[in-house]
Image 1 (spheres, rainbow, N blue to C red):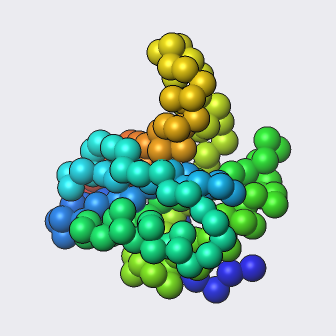
Image 2 (image 1 turned 180 degrees about the horizontal axis):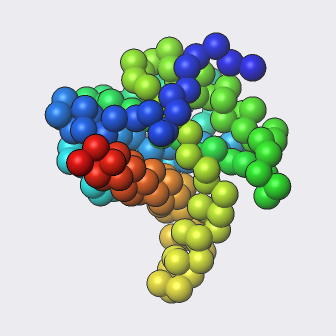
Image 3 (image 1 turned 135 degrees about the vertical axis):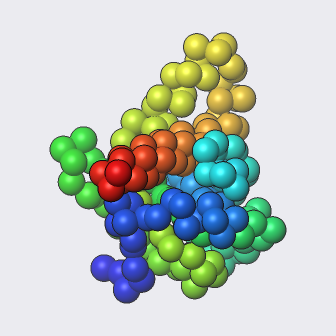
Amino acid sequence: MTNFFIKDILKVKIDELIASKAVIIGLDIGDKTVGVAVSDSRIKIASGLATVSRNGTDRDFNFLMDAVSHYKIGLIIFGWPLQMNGLPGKQCEKTLEFTERLSKYINADFARWDERFSTKVVDDLMIQADLSRKKRKKAVDQSAAVYILQGAIDFLNRNSVLTKQDFL
């Protein structure tokens, strides 16, 4: 399916990323847009960065590169859109195709994060915040990228603490 390497999230060494002053980029990859989020340099907090419209060409990657060009990227977390039964489906194939092509533009490790319900959760939160449909549509992909990235960051930080405690 793909030739590029996807790193196991359990093998990500967050301390090394922090020491190198790198950030993690989070992506919510859809058919029409890509939501982009970025971590702080301490890898504690995810923030929205951009929503990039897709048209199926290399222009997609150029716009994405413009959005992240001034960051030192240590890792890219992309949402892994599993089906409800936990198995990868057609959307996972599309996501792999996109990330494989992106790996030719960005020299960083890639890891996937289960994104089931991310857009739904974010959309529900926006509805509760009484955002109009128009505002929700404009912000949902970027917000979903933040949700995906924050989940991965929280996991990496918890996993790092557990690993350190195991050696004490």
